[in-house]
Length: 409
Image 1 (cartoon, rainbow, N blue to C red):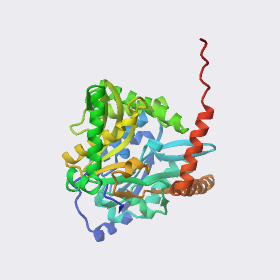
Image 2: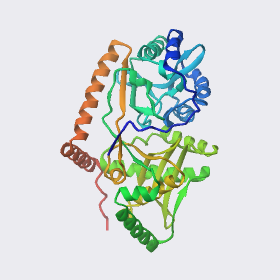
Image 3: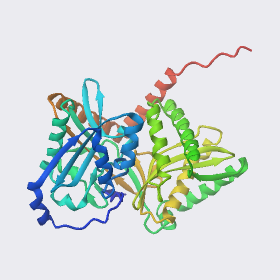
Image 4: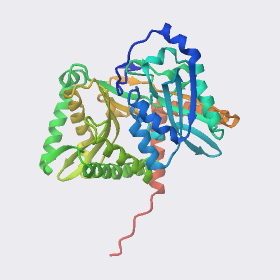
C-alpha cells in the first residue's frame, strides 16, 4: 500500500518555474482582498490559467452558486496586481453560527484552492491569514472558515494551505496506480480472479438480455443516468439509515447543470457512465477528469433482481480498463474506505482540514468540530466499533420505516 500524498493531476497549467529566492522578495507586496458573489467573474477568469482540484473549478463553483443561490464570498491573494491564490467559499448557517466552506459542502472532496504555481514558493501562513482577515472585514457575520478534505498536494505541488495549523481528515481517500496499463494492474491485484468474475458477470447479464456500458453524451442521457443514480442512492441511503445528501432539489439541479455543461467541452471535466442490462440501468458512476487522474466522485447500484451479480464491480472494471486505455496515471475512488475500493486500491491519501476562527463564537465551533473529527476517526478506524455503528444505523432505519400495508384480500 502506497502512502500517498499522491500527486493529484489537476487541471494542469504550463507553470514557469521561479526560484524561491526571487519569490521571497515578493512577500512584502502581497495584497489580500475579499468580496461577495460579484467576485465570481474574477475567479472564473483566474481559473483559466490556475491549478485547482475539480471542486474548485469555475464550472463547479458557478453552477453551485446558480443552482443553490449560495451566499458566496471570494478572497484573493495578489502580488503586484497578479492573483496568486483565490478562495471561492459559500457561507452557511450551522445553528447559531455562520461558517464559510468550499462550495458544495460534503460533495466537495479532494480540495485544492485555485493557485498560480509560480507564486507558491513565497505563499506562507501570514499571507494566507491576511486573506482570512479580509474575509472577516468584508463579512463580520462569519464566525469560522472551515476548509475540509484538503489534498496534501496537487500535481506534485504542496497545498499552500498546509502552511496553516491543520489536522487529519477522519476519512481516507483511496486510489489505484495505473502504471504499466491494465494488464500490469491486474497482475498486481488478483487479476485472474477479477477476469474470471467479469466473465461470469457477462454470462449472467447475457442470460437476461443485452447489456452495454453507456457514457452520457447528450443532455437527455445526462438526465437519464442522473435520474437512475439519484433513485438508487435514495434507496441505498434509506436502507443504511443515512441522510440522503443528494435529496435536496437544488443539489440535484446542480449536478444536472454541471454534467450538462461539461458536454460542451472538448474533453469533458465531468462525465457519467452507466451499465444497462435488459434496457434498465443497473449501476451508475459520476467522475471528474483531472489531468492524468480520473476520479470517481460518486456511484450507485440498483437494488433489484440483478444486484447479486455486483453490477457496480462490473462497471468499475470497465471504467478502470478504459482509464488505462486513455492513458490516465491514476484511478481515484475519492473519499471513503470501502471493501469494493480495497479490491483495487494500492494508494491511500490522507486529506487534512484547516479551521480558521474569525470570532469568539468561531473558536467554540472550531473546538467542537475538531472533537467531532477525532470521534469520527476513532469510530471509522476501529473495525469493531465501525461495524457496530453501521449495524445500529440499519436497525434504526428499519424501525423508522412505515409498516407495510395489510393485504385486504
